[in-house]
Length: 241
Image 1 (cartoon, helix red, strand yellow):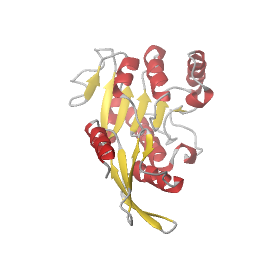
Image 2 (tube, rainbow, N blue to C red):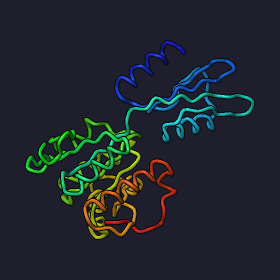
Image 3 (cartoon, rainbow, N blue to C red):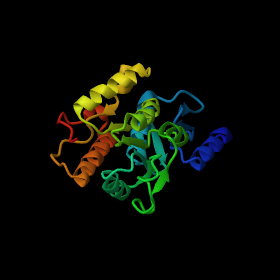
């Protein structure tokens, strides 16, 4: 590997950023797929670059063939992250399910009475204002963001950052009426229709549940679906909450 690519790969891994090393097996030439794009000695066939993105999405290193050439896609991924805005009742079971699925969870809530170590033992809690916390966390394509407070003062600033990031999933709790008002506020704040359209709202797959744990299951099911199938392949079912 070229020294510049090696140094970049080491720096990205040290910074907990995802990277895929792509090696052409006949020549030994290699490329890096990073959050900024593909870097290497020549242009990489788009089909191989897309295969590398899919390998990263599914945490699966494997061979790929393009024409007469074979490539090895070596995935170096940090843990997936779930950022939850709002230390509410749904958050507690959501954390348990997300951690069991391999996510590193951070809960953002500036309301000290909600985000306590007693209610969330062992969980990373952040009491900064949501937009400041989100900017510091830098959501990437390994990150899902969920807002649960029902309070526009807390949810909207976090959404503004999340929707302009590479987060693979953004969901927000609330009824259709609540979401319609949210869309008006975010539009007034300058977000585009395409950015706002990334929000999964009402949040979660339609499983019919109403209890906090049931809603948490619906949310995590939708996150898993989007992660592996992509937002465009989601079921057309109504959302859960």
